Amino acid sequence: MTKMNPWENALRQLDDVIEVLDIDSSTKDALSYPERVTESRILLKTDSGVDVYPAYRVWHNTARGPAKGGIRFHPQVSVEEVKALSMWMTWKNAVAGVPFGGGKGGIIVNPKELSKGELEGLSRGFVRSLGSLFGQNTDIPAPDVNTNPTIMGWMIDEYETMRGKKEPGALTGKPIELGGSEGRTEATGLGGFYATLNAIKEFEIRGKRVAVQGFGNVGYYAAKFFSNHGFKVVAVSDSKGGIYDEQGLDIEKIRATKLKTGKVKGPGKEIKNAELLELPVSILVPCAIENVINQNNAADIEAKLIVELANGPTTPDADKILEEQGKIVIPDVLANSGGVTVSYLEWVQNRMGYYWTQKEVREKMKTVMDGAFTQVHKKYKEQKKSMRVAAISLAVECVVEAMKLRGQL
Image 1 (cartoon, rainbow, N blue to C red):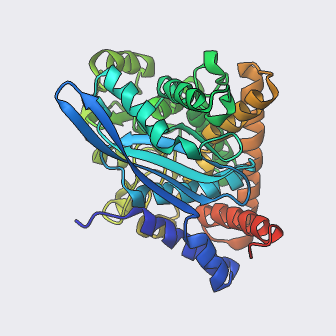
Image 2 (cartoon, helix red, strand yellow):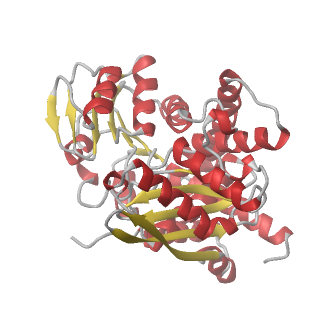
Image 3 (cartoon, rainbow, N blue to C red):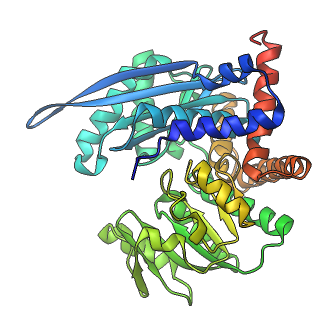
Protein backbone atom coordinates (compact mmCIF):
# COMPACT_ATOMS: atom_id res chain seq x y z
CA MET A 1 0.00 0.00 0.00
CA THR A 2 1.33 3.45 -0.90
CA LYS A 3 2.41 5.48 2.12
CA MET A 4 0.01 8.38 2.66
CA ASN A 5 1.65 11.81 2.69
CA PRO A 6 0.32 14.01 5.53
CA TRP A 7 1.28 17.23 3.70
CA GLU A 8 -0.77 16.18 0.69
CA ASN A 9 -3.67 15.39 3.03
CA ALA A 10 -3.38 18.83 4.65
CA LEU A 11 -3.41 20.50 1.22
CA ARG A 12 -6.45 18.46 0.16
CA GLN A 13 -8.29 19.60 3.27
CA LEU A 14 -7.37 23.19 2.45
CA ASP A 15 -8.59 22.72 -1.14
CA ASP A 16 -12.00 21.59 0.15
CA VAL A 17 -12.26 24.76 2.22
CA ILE A 18 -10.98 27.06 -0.53
CA GLU A 19 -13.74 25.75 -2.78
CA VAL A 20 -16.43 26.42 -0.16
CA LEU A 21 -15.15 29.91 0.69
CA ASP A 22 -14.44 30.86 -2.94
CA ILE A 23 -10.98 32.20 -2.12
CA ASP A 24 -8.79 33.54 -4.94
CA SER A 25 -5.72 31.69 -6.22
CA SER A 26 -3.14 34.09 -4.78
CA THR A 27 -4.58 33.70 -1.29
CA LYS A 28 -4.65 29.94 -1.77
CA ASP A 29 -0.98 29.99 -2.73
CA ALA A 30 -0.13 32.10 0.31
CA LEU A 31 -1.79 29.53 2.58
CA SER A 32 -0.32 26.55 0.75
CA TYR A 33 3.35 27.36 1.35
CA PRO A 34 4.99 27.46 4.79
CA GLU A 35 6.63 30.73 5.78
CA ARG A 36 9.79 29.01 6.93
CA VAL A 37 11.16 25.47 6.70
CA THR A 38 14.36 24.96 8.67
CA GLU A 39 16.27 21.69 8.38
CA SER A 40 19.25 20.86 10.55
CA ARG A 41 21.13 17.94 12.02
CA ILE A 42 22.03 17.10 15.59
CA LEU A 43 25.31 15.39 16.45
CA LEU A 44 25.01 13.19 19.52
CA LYS A 45 28.12 11.71 21.10
CA THR A 46 27.68 8.21 22.48
CA ASP A 47 30.03 5.58 23.86
CA SER A 48 30.19 4.01 20.40
CA GLY A 49 30.84 7.21 18.44
CA VAL A 50 28.77 10.06 17.02
CA ASP A 51 25.20 9.62 15.78
CA VAL A 52 23.54 12.07 13.40
CA TYR A 53 19.83 12.93 13.71
CA PRO A 54 17.94 15.07 11.13
CA ALA A 55 15.80 17.77 12.76
CA TYR A 56 13.16 20.19 11.51
CA ARG A 57 11.27 23.29 12.57
CA VAL A 58 8.52 24.70 10.33
CA TRP A 59 6.47 27.88 10.56
CA HIS A 60 3.34 27.64 8.45
CA ASN A 61 1.80 31.06 9.10
CA THR A 62 2.48 33.69 11.77
CA ALA A 63 0.01 36.40 10.74
CA ARG A 64 -1.95 35.92 13.97
CA GLY A 65 1.05 35.73 16.31
CA PRO A 66 4.23 33.80 17.18
CA ALA A 67 4.65 30.29 15.78
CA LYS A 68 3.26 27.76 18.26
CA GLY A 69 3.48 23.99 18.13
CA GLY A 70 5.12 20.95 19.60
CA ILE A 71 8.32 19.01 19.01
CA ARG A 72 8.05 15.28 18.36
CA PHE A 73 10.73 12.58 18.60
CA HIS A 74 9.78 9.69 16.31
CA PRO A 75 11.46 7.49 13.68
CA GLN A 76 8.77 8.38 11.12
CA VAL A 77 9.23 12.15 11.39
CA SER A 78 9.72 13.79 7.98
CA VAL A 79 9.73 17.32 6.64
CA GLU A 80 6.41 16.57 4.91
CA GLU A 81 4.86 15.49 8.21
CA VAL A 82 6.17 18.54 10.07
CA LYS A 83 4.86 20.86 7.35
CA ALA A 84 1.40 19.29 7.66
CA LEU A 85 1.44 19.50 11.43
CA SER A 86 2.44 23.16 11.28
CA MET A 87 -0.50 23.92 8.98
CA TRP A 88 -2.88 22.10 11.32
CA MET A 89 -1.46 24.16 14.19
CA THR A 90 -2.28 27.35 12.29
CA TRP A 91 -5.90 26.23 12.00
CA LYS A 92 -6.04 24.89 15.56
CA ASN A 93 -4.80 28.14 17.11
CA ALA A 94 -7.26 30.15 15.02
CA VAL A 95 -10.19 27.89 15.95
CA ALA A 96 -9.32 28.19 19.63
CA GLY A 97 -8.93 31.94 19.25
CA VAL A 98 -5.48 32.04 20.86
CA PRO A 99 -3.05 34.66 19.44
CA PHE A 100 -0.58 32.30 17.79
CA GLY A 101 0.43 31.16 14.34
CA GLY A 102 1.25 27.58 13.41
CA GLY A 103 4.60 25.90 13.94
CA LYS A 104 5.92 22.38 14.49
CA GLY A 105 9.21 20.57 14.98
CA GLY A 106 10.63 17.09 15.05
CA ILE A 107 13.65 14.82 15.14
CA ILE A 108 13.97 11.54 13.25
CA VAL A 109 14.82 9.26 16.17
CA ASN A 110 13.50 6.33 18.16
CA PRO A 111 13.83 7.77 21.68
CA LYS A 112 13.23 4.32 23.21
CA GLU A 113 16.70 3.34 21.97
CA LEU A 114 18.40 6.18 23.88
CA SER A 115 19.56 6.31 27.49
CA LYS A 116 18.33 9.15 29.68
CA GLY A 117 21.65 10.95 29.24
CA GLU A 118 21.51 10.55 25.46
CA LEU A 119 17.92 11.80 25.41
CA GLU A 120 18.97 14.89 27.34
CA GLY A 121 21.88 15.44 24.97
CA LEU A 122 19.57 15.16 21.96
CA SER A 123 17.06 17.59 23.50
CA ARG A 124 19.73 20.16 24.26
CA GLY A 125 21.20 19.62 20.80
CA PHE A 126 17.85 20.47 19.22
CA VAL A 127 17.87 23.82 21.03
CA ARG A 128 21.49 24.54 20.12
CA SER A 129 20.68 23.75 16.49
CA LEU A 130 17.31 25.47 16.09
CA GLY A 131 16.88 27.55 19.24
CA SER A 132 17.74 30.81 17.48
CA LEU A 133 14.17 30.63 16.18
CA PHE A 134 12.66 30.37 19.66
CA GLY A 135 11.37 33.18 21.85
CA GLN A 136 8.17 34.19 23.61
CA ASN A 137 7.45 36.65 20.79
CA THR A 138 8.64 34.53 17.85
CA ASP A 139 8.34 30.73 18.24
CA ILE A 140 7.10 28.83 21.28
CA PRO A 141 7.63 25.03 21.21
CA ALA A 142 5.83 22.52 23.42
CA PRO A 143 5.68 18.73 23.96
CA ASP A 144 4.31 16.40 21.30
CA VAL A 145 4.75 12.70 20.50
CA ASN A 146 7.46 11.16 22.73
CA THR A 147 8.32 14.47 24.40
CA ASN A 148 7.22 15.58 27.86
CA PRO A 149 7.77 18.14 30.66
CA THR A 150 11.17 16.65 31.54
CA ILE A 151 12.38 17.22 27.98
CA MET A 152 10.91 20.71 27.97
CA GLY A 153 12.81 21.35 31.20
CA TRP A 154 16.11 20.44 29.53
CA MET A 155 15.21 22.56 26.52
CA ILE A 156 14.26 25.70 28.45
CA ASP A 157 17.46 25.39 30.48
CA GLU A 158 19.55 25.14 27.31
CA TYR A 159 17.66 28.02 25.71
CA GLU A 160 18.04 30.31 28.75
CA THR A 161 21.73 29.39 29.04
CA MET A 162 22.24 30.36 25.38
CA ARG A 163 20.38 33.64 25.84
CA GLY A 164 21.90 34.45 29.22
CA LYS A 165 18.54 35.35 30.74
CA LYS A 166 15.37 33.77 32.11
CA GLU A 167 12.53 33.61 29.58
CA PRO A 168 10.11 30.86 30.69
CA GLY A 169 7.53 31.93 28.10
CA ALA A 170 9.80 30.71 25.30
CA LEU A 171 8.60 27.11 25.74
CA THR A 172 5.43 25.64 27.22
CA GLY A 173 4.57 22.26 28.68
CA LYS A 174 7.36 22.73 31.23
CA PRO A 175 7.51 21.20 34.73
CA ILE A 176 5.51 23.21 37.27
CA GLU A 177 8.73 24.08 39.11
CA LEU A 178 10.14 25.76 35.98
CA GLY A 179 7.08 27.86 35.20
CA GLY A 180 4.74 25.21 33.85
CA SER A 181 0.99 25.51 34.29
CA GLU A 182 -1.31 23.52 36.49
CA GLY A 183 -3.64 21.48 34.30
CA ARG A 184 -1.26 21.20 31.32
CA THR A 185 -0.53 17.47 31.60
CA GLU A 186 -4.16 16.39 31.19
CA ALA A 187 -5.24 19.30 28.98
CA THR A 188 -5.50 17.56 25.60
CA GLY A 189 -7.38 14.56 26.96
CA LEU A 190 -9.69 16.71 29.08
CA GLY A 191 -10.31 19.13 26.21
CA GLY A 192 -11.28 16.18 24.03
CA PHE A 193 -13.73 15.09 26.69
CA TYR A 194 -15.29 18.57 26.74
CA ALA A 195 -15.56 18.51 22.93
CA THR A 196 -17.26 15.10 23.11
CA LEU A 197 -19.86 16.35 25.58
CA ASN A 198 -20.71 19.19 23.21
CA ALA A 199 -20.91 16.80 20.25
CA ILE A 200 -23.17 14.37 22.09
CA LYS A 201 -25.56 17.21 22.88
CA GLU A 202 -25.61 18.82 19.43
CA PHE A 203 -25.67 15.61 17.38
CA GLU A 204 -27.79 13.55 19.79
CA ILE A 205 -25.28 10.71 19.97
CA ARG A 206 -26.67 7.73 21.86
CA GLY A 207 -24.65 5.12 23.70
CA LYS A 208 -21.65 5.51 25.99
CA ARG A 209 -19.30 2.77 24.81
CA VAL A 210 -15.88 4.22 24.01
CA ALA A 211 -12.72 2.87 22.34
CA VAL A 212 -9.44 4.77 22.71
CA GLN A 213 -6.56 4.12 20.31
CA GLY A 214 -3.26 5.27 21.79
CA PHE A 215 -2.52 5.06 25.50
CA GLY A 216 0.18 7.64 26.01
CA ASN A 217 -0.47 10.85 27.91
CA VAL A 218 -3.40 11.97 25.74
CA GLY A 219 -5.07 8.57 25.46
CA TYR A 220 -4.73 7.81 29.15
CA TYR A 221 -6.31 11.07 30.28
CA ALA A 222 -9.06 10.83 27.68
CA ALA A 223 -9.90 7.31 28.86
CA LYS A 224 -9.70 8.42 32.48
CA PHE A 225 -12.15 11.30 32.07
CA PHE A 226 -14.59 9.20 30.05
CA SER A 227 -14.43 6.38 32.58
CA ASN A 228 -14.87 8.73 35.54
CA HIS A 229 -17.98 10.39 34.07
CA GLY A 230 -20.33 7.55 33.30
CA PHE A 231 -18.90 6.28 30.02
CA LYS A 232 -17.79 2.68 29.51
CA VAL A 233 -14.31 2.47 28.00
CA VAL A 234 -14.31 -1.01 26.47
CA ALA A 235 -11.01 -0.92 24.55
CA VAL A 236 -7.62 0.78 24.68
CA SER A 237 -4.41 0.14 22.77
CA ASP A 238 -0.86 1.33 22.26
CA SER A 239 1.73 0.68 19.55
CA LYS A 240 2.21 -2.90 20.76
CA GLY A 241 -1.45 -3.92 20.88
CA GLY A 242 -4.51 -3.54 23.04
CA ILE A 243 -7.30 -5.10 25.07
CA TYR A 244 -11.07 -5.26 24.71
CA ASP A 245 -13.66 -6.06 27.34
CA GLU A 246 -17.31 -5.31 26.58
CA GLN A 247 -17.96 -4.99 30.33
CA GLY A 248 -15.54 -2.06 30.55
CA LEU A 249 -11.89 -1.64 31.54
CA ASP A 250 -10.19 -0.48 34.73
CA ILE A 251 -8.18 2.40 33.29
CA GLU A 252 -6.02 3.00 36.37
CA LYS A 253 -4.96 -0.65 36.58
CA ILE A 254 -4.06 -0.67 32.89
CA ARG A 255 -2.07 2.54 33.37
CA ALA A 256 -0.18 1.06 36.31
CA THR A 257 0.62 -2.09 34.31
CA LYS A 258 1.87 -0.07 31.34
CA LEU A 259 4.12 2.05 33.55
CA LYS A 260 5.56 -1.14 35.02
CA THR A 261 5.86 -3.32 31.90
CA GLY A 262 5.74 -0.85 29.01
CA LYS A 263 2.69 -2.58 27.52
CA VAL A 264 -1.10 -2.31 27.65
CA LYS A 265 -2.24 -5.43 29.46
CA GLY A 266 -5.16 -6.51 31.59
CA PRO A 267 -8.26 -8.70 31.75
CA GLY A 268 -10.02 -8.96 28.40
CA LYS A 269 -9.38 -10.01 24.83
CA GLU A 270 -6.09 -9.03 23.21
CA ILE A 271 -6.66 -7.01 20.03
CA LYS A 272 -4.62 -5.19 17.42
CA ASN A 273 -4.82 -1.45 16.80
CA ALA A 274 -6.64 -2.02 13.52
CA GLU A 275 -9.27 -4.16 15.27
CA LEU A 276 -9.94 -1.47 17.87
CA LEU A 277 -11.03 0.97 15.17
CA GLU A 278 -13.82 -1.33 14.01
CA LEU A 279 -15.32 -2.31 17.37
CA PRO A 280 -19.07 -1.90 18.08
CA VAL A 281 -18.82 1.33 20.08
CA SER A 282 -20.59 4.68 20.00
CA ILE A 283 -17.48 6.84 20.33
CA LEU A 284 -14.04 6.24 18.80
CA VAL A 285 -11.12 8.32 20.05
CA PRO A 286 -7.91 8.03 17.97
CA CYS A 287 -5.01 9.39 20.06
CA ALA A 288 -1.99 7.98 18.23
CA ILE A 289 -0.59 8.93 14.80
CA GLU A 290 -1.72 10.10 11.36
CA ASN A 291 -3.69 8.18 8.72
CA VAL A 292 -5.01 5.36 10.94
CA ILE A 293 -8.52 5.90 9.53
CA ASN A 294 -8.23 5.64 5.77
CA GLN A 295 -10.06 4.45 2.66
CA ASN A 296 -9.24 0.84 3.51
CA ASN A 297 -11.05 0.74 6.85
CA ALA A 298 -13.40 3.75 7.05
CA ALA A 299 -16.42 1.80 5.82
CA ASP A 300 -15.93 -0.74 8.62
CA ILE A 301 -15.97 1.77 11.47
CA GLU A 302 -19.11 1.35 13.56
CA ALA A 303 -18.72 4.34 15.90
CA LYS A 304 -21.21 7.14 15.25
CA LEU A 305 -18.83 9.76 16.65
CA ILE A 306 -15.07 9.99 16.00
CA VAL A 307 -13.19 12.44 18.23
CA GLU A 308 -9.72 13.14 16.86
CA LEU A 309 -7.24 13.61 19.67
CA ALA A 310 -4.35 12.62 17.40
CA ASN A 311 -3.19 15.01 14.69
CA GLY A 312 -4.36 13.98 11.22
CA PRO A 313 -5.70 10.50 12.06
CA THR A 314 -8.30 10.57 9.26
CA THR A 315 -7.39 10.88 5.58
CA PRO A 316 -9.48 12.96 3.15
CA ASP A 317 -10.69 9.81 1.40
CA ALA A 318 -11.84 8.37 4.70
CA ASP A 319 -13.58 11.63 5.57
CA LYS A 320 -15.76 11.31 2.49
CA ILE A 321 -16.68 7.71 3.32
CA LEU A 322 -17.56 8.58 6.91
CA GLU A 323 -19.62 11.57 5.81
CA GLU A 324 -21.57 9.43 3.34
CA GLN A 325 -22.36 7.00 6.18
CA GLY A 326 -23.62 9.79 8.42
CA LYS A 327 -20.75 9.53 10.90
CA ILE A 328 -19.68 12.67 12.77
CA VAL A 329 -15.98 13.51 12.99
CA ILE A 330 -14.90 16.15 15.50
CA PRO A 331 -11.67 17.21 13.77
CA ASP A 332 -8.28 17.41 15.42
CA VAL A 333 -8.06 21.20 15.01
CA LEU A 334 -11.04 21.46 17.36
CA ALA A 335 -11.05 18.27 19.45
CA ASN A 336 -7.43 18.32 20.61
CA SER A 337 -7.05 22.07 21.03
CA GLY A 338 -7.20 21.79 24.83
CA GLY A 339 -3.43 21.28 24.86
CA VAL A 340 -2.56 24.45 23.00
CA THR A 341 -5.20 26.36 24.94
CA VAL A 342 -3.48 25.56 28.22
CA SER A 343 -0.12 26.22 26.56
CA TYR A 344 -1.47 29.69 25.84
CA LEU A 345 -2.54 30.03 29.47
CA GLU A 346 0.97 28.92 30.55
CA TRP A 347 2.51 31.54 28.25
CA VAL A 348 0.25 34.23 29.72
CA GLN A 349 1.16 33.18 33.27
CA ASN A 350 4.87 33.21 32.44
CA ARG A 351 4.63 36.71 31.02
CA MET A 352 2.69 38.21 33.92
CA GLY A 353 4.44 36.22 36.68
CA TYR A 354 1.14 35.18 38.25
CA TYR A 355 -0.07 31.59 38.31
CA TRP A 356 -3.58 30.10 38.46
CA THR A 357 -4.81 27.00 40.27
CA GLN A 358 -5.72 23.80 38.42
CA LYS A 359 -9.40 24.61 38.91
CA GLU A 360 -8.97 28.08 37.40
CA VAL A 361 -7.00 26.71 34.45
CA ARG A 362 -9.61 24.03 33.74
CA GLU A 363 -12.42 26.57 33.92
CA LYS A 364 -10.65 28.89 31.50
CA MET A 365 -9.90 26.01 29.12
CA LYS A 366 -13.50 24.80 29.20
CA THR A 367 -14.71 28.31 28.34
CA VAL A 368 -12.40 28.39 25.31
CA MET A 369 -13.26 24.83 24.19
CA ASP A 370 -17.02 25.36 24.53
CA GLY A 371 -16.83 28.66 22.66
CA ALA A 372 -14.78 27.13 19.85
CA PHE A 373 -17.21 24.24 19.48
CA THR A 374 -20.16 26.64 19.35
CA GLN A 375 -18.53 28.69 16.58
CA VAL A 376 -17.57 25.64 14.51
CA HIS A 377 -20.99 24.05 14.91
CA LYS A 378 -22.63 27.30 13.81
CA LYS A 379 -20.46 27.29 10.68
CA TYR A 380 -21.31 23.60 10.15
CA LYS A 381 -25.04 24.37 10.15
CA GLU A 382 -24.54 27.27 7.73
CA GLN A 383 -22.41 25.32 5.26
CA LYS A 384 -24.09 21.93 5.58
CA LYS A 385 -20.68 20.30 5.04
CA SER A 386 -18.54 18.40 7.57
CA MET A 387 -17.30 19.61 10.95
CA ARG A 388 -13.76 19.53 9.54
CA VAL A 389 -14.65 21.83 6.66
CA ALA A 390 -16.46 24.10 9.13
CA ALA A 391 -13.51 24.26 11.52
CA ILE A 392 -10.88 24.89 8.87
CA SER A 393 -13.18 27.41 7.14
CA LEU A 394 -13.46 29.35 10.37
CA ALA A 395 -9.69 29.22 10.82
CA VAL A 396 -8.90 30.24 7.23
CA GLU A 397 -11.20 33.24 7.49
CA CYS A 398 -9.40 34.37 10.67
CA VAL A 399 -5.93 33.90 9.17
CA VAL A 400 -6.80 35.58 5.87
CA GLU A 401 -8.28 38.56 7.71
CA ALA A 402 -5.08 38.90 9.78
CA MET A 403 -2.95 38.73 6.61
CA LYS A 404 -5.09 41.42 4.94
CA LEU A 405 -4.84 43.70 7.98
CA ARG A 406 -1.06 43.33 7.82
CA GLY A 407 -1.09 44.23 4.12
CA GLN A 408 0.17 40.78 3.14
CA LEU A 409 -2.80 40.15 0.82
